[in-house]
Image (cartoon, rainbow, N blue to C red):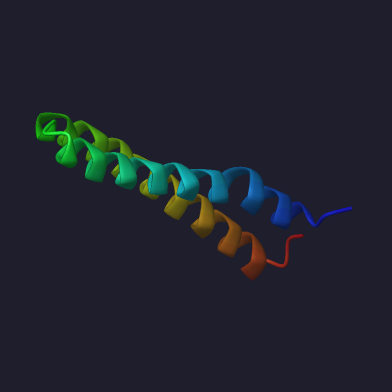
Length: 69
């Protein structure tokens, strides 16, 4: 059975980072398609994904410092 933190990293943090990666690629494509007016909203979504990933990783690190499994 996978470690609970490994599952949490996989199910939450990696999904958030994967979403951020897709959003960054979308920004590049929007620029190439001449749709630069849509980039700020996509960047805001990207920032939100990254902020959520940081919060999640900080929570996991706090659990590790406290000896939680």
